Image (cartoon, rainbow, N blue to C red; front, side, top):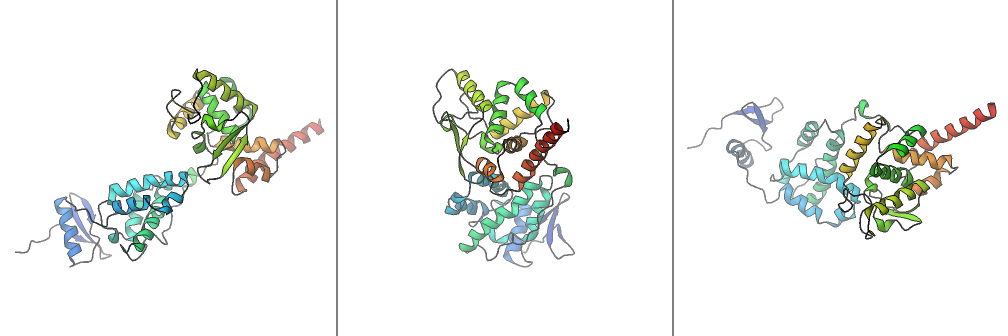
Length: 333
């Protein structure tokens, strides 16, 4: 005796769903096929067998590939949360059953975090290229996906640190926050690189690093303020640090994570009334200081590691305008 399928509902578009307690579960398979029946009973029983060609298996294979190893550490960190999300949502599902509407549904479910949502088709596309090579599927449903537009409210530019804000931070900040501040301004690097500096990167004349985002190696002369902050931090340890010990730690030994650093700086900026100036803008303050020192765009790029000069022109141009205005004011008087 064939069991009657209950709770089925068909959308005007022709797509089938199973409605259980007000929730619609999609059946991503053609009607009257074994795949349709299997998906229906998976939904009804709450049991889903893990496909041999599952997304979890594909992600595992991709992490072992040369393609994944060739990506920069920053890019891998950006994609890992998306991989974790895919494993949680469709990890056991057959790779061949994902459709383009499914990708749009996942993006819409994450609209509140636009950057993450727009990384979903990027990750799926990378994985599908591998799936096609392995003959797990024939197409790449992520091709042609339209990204979610960033809301205007979230496009606020970083406000460069003003002279008075810099002076207040240097005069009143707690030692660890002051060290983070000086690393940001003095190195002119992205915040994601700050937690990667080790004592071995500080040789008494320069700071050495390989940028996470671009994989560019840099040797950076440091400012007097940064050198003083580094020397004070080293002295506060009470011991000679090993070269592989991170400069930024939570207790002198435990590496500081990016999130820990961001939270610490947020609390300090609130305490000092500097909430308008975020930690990302410290990089731009560094660019402005280089421009004030007379550096041209190429010289600034050699220090900051920018691969394009658009942001350099923006903040260096602002710094040069301020400098010229001051010179004009002096002549006027």
